[in-house]
Length: 98
Image 1 (cartoon, rainbow, N blue to C red):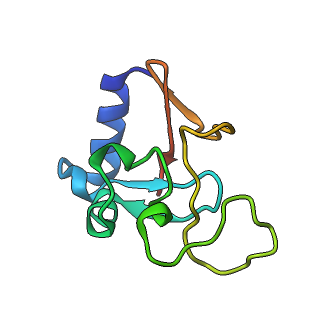
Image 2: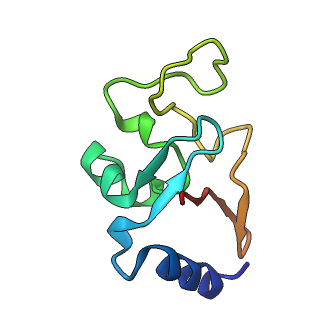
């Protein structure tokens, strides 16, 4: 998928206000909007790339199968294990959270 196609899909799903766009963490399944990332203090580049839990005071460890809490994890898309499923012109990001 190229960037233009991805932007069109995002606008179709969520509208033109990108703060309302939502992304699903491929590790824990948590869905967060760009606004959620901003509220957590994450840099804008983190939305859709790393789980919002990395910037929250309480999160669970990525890949911890024993932790059944329904909270975001600390998964980082740029880490050794990149699970980000969507390729946009060579950059891997989270899928939209619908």
